[in-house]
Image (cartoon, rainbow, N blue to C red; front, side):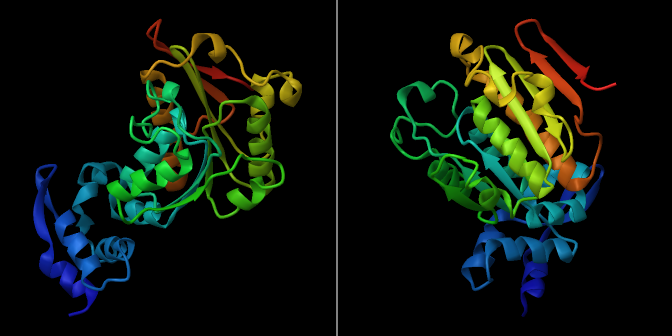
Length: 283
């Protein structure tokens, strides 16, 4: 039997929204990959093309659908930063089945990362964050490839790192690097999903090529301070998870051409006051 025939033979019916959908259990997906399929990603793609949903995506099915899941598996997203925001972004995009992630971060885990960085553990202090992102993704979804770069983003390397991507996600923690990222994404014609956190507050905005983007938020631009109020307020555990979740939603919306991105709008989240506001940045 060819791969599709084997997938059909090992699929089963699952309840969904009062009806049913044919799914491929994770155990069968892994077995097919071990038995000679080109890769776990090819197993998932072959299943989707045959109208069979990899069971791991059943809870996304109503929102994403078969065609949308195939789109995600073929997509590439660059995540710049693998710390507080970036770790959660890698986690969620991997679980959603975005097929290729480019992760760039030159930092290594320190004790003070343990309070909020998903990828930091007591056992990997001193390890490169980008490599930890790659390892975590491999544990979650073998169909997702993580290209990890233990490097700091610079004006010299940014375009090379970002070029394969369809969407870029800003998980950085300093303004100079954010402006380098915005410039590079704009030159490559790529949308950039910005996120920033400080204390109980966070913000999210999606910047398309040609938009003023960060210049609207930081009038001092690249000549401004390296870091802002987060130096004093720190970042409690839940804040990066809150903002990263919104960044992932924006990324998925862009890839699937769904909904309205936060373009020229800033989502401002204040967990302390229990408020969420969308601020219009341009008339």
